[in-house]
Length: 427
Image (cartoon, rainbow, N blue to C red; front, side, top):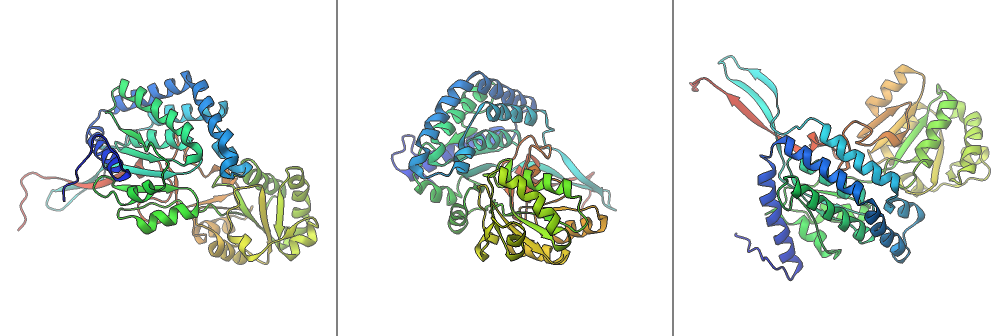
């Protein structure tokens, strides 16, 4: 069936078709664009954001001022905020992505068959990516940069709470990118916050090749239920730190405090702390002093509350809750196996860490914990594309197929088989 594309869209469906058609045309041009042009465009965007930082901050403040109307928590407002440091981080991410090797067209896994055929695989763009996200306006720049560099057009649908921030960032990206040689409409922001557009994007299989939702569980579940195109999910970040019986307790205090309090409102912040019973008394009494100074609410099991008298009682629901706030659930476990079982039962397969000096336990933890990112002796806050050397990320996939963990350039490509022959025919 042919889709009629309206050049002056009046309804949300007409708008979706209009954006989708423009994205499909842009994707065809991006797929064959010289890497130098893409890199120059990213650097031009970085300069434009730097030059217009005051304008970005002004538009972001409009969103911050409206945040109370939406009932956002302090942690959610923190995710929304674009201060000088975070604008600087966006600029740095653009420059880092420009420096990364372009995956498009690279050939790998080449093998020669007995008949002389050489069979390998070539990386190619996916096509048009749809990103549906909430709160964090830096996603606009991160997603746009990664999609452009990997040869994909992108349609962005941000939340109403960040509408002004997203709008100015998308405008700057388009103006600077087009001026540096990118095809028009390589990065498009849906110009409405009408929730109907979420469903329309999820069903736009004539135009969009992949949907990536980033936000609360309700948003992701809706997209998964309604989508007629592939979805890569970024579910809850119910991240754990397990302090093993063989942990360096000074290190364990430092890692737990950083994992929880450095920025509580993000998906890689720790939500549950598990402590082996052999070190629980000494460790929790030391940790409690710092958490109290940080204003952290502790919700603990019975043993935790004996050791931290001011802790509140943890319910069954707490173990499977992503607080995105300065709240921490704590449990004392009987054994290493109990810790792993707890993580695999209540976790979200995002990021989990062990603190231990026992090599064999560390390796068992890496093998047995079923999560996208598994750490030994490091803060969960490092679960991030930028920290992994990807420049930035388009999300952290908790799926197991196609991409798992932080998604960078390579994860935004597909691979097709390529075959080189010299006249071979099949007998």
